[in-house]
Image 1: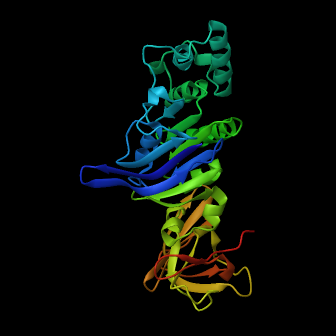
Image 2 (image 1 turned 90 degrees about the vertical axis):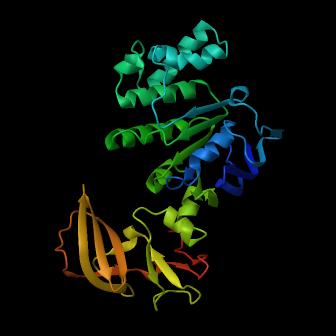
Length: 339
């Protein structure tokens, strides 16, 4: 179990991590979700022991590992960049942590073979990193980290530099692979969709502050605040002044996710919002419809391909039960019930 106790980090006059406490879910995937500069990499480096916190302690179980070198801890880390040993073959790259552990040649061969097979690297074991595609290089970096069998595996946006198709493919494989192991995984990402696909637990970060931590679906369905809801929405959460039909009088603003907005009435009590089309973006088999209404602008995420003329009148429909409500301080006062 890794526990961060009252951790802060200052770099010069800047605060990169504000005081926070976080206990990772042991043997599970823990996602760090936040925009660029939210503090994800800073937190990973503190967890790894690459940096020492300005205040607070890092605990591994009952052991205080604050400031203990990463070399003296059972940790593996994979970065955004394809970091491999260029002079070593794929086989030698994967085998390198096992050699440091002084495993026998037989054990190394067996382990490298297993990992290479899982990550579809077997045909490339004799090649060097420069002879590999980007996806194959990142698979090699992942394979080396997995071969170490570390208690803690830290992944800093490991798929961000890959093209979309390959990223989706590797994410599925990686999720299946990590869920079969008893390793505590910390996976940093800027993408809410990726957090949902990985499952497990999610910590939402913003500007070096921990907004919320819990089971991923619980955090998504019941964000504790407007800031947490906005960080865990893609497209961004639609925010409106409180509607008369909203189910709680304490709310000063209501929010609705883009996929919960429709262009046809679904129920007799749906809220109708009339506006004008600003833009209709077609992405594959989906349409992102941007609609302006008075001082508000909404985005609806619609399945299928829909054509709209810019400026044409348009009505959107929202089920009141799908609304989130926030008070003047940004605290969540109501949220949709889990279906």
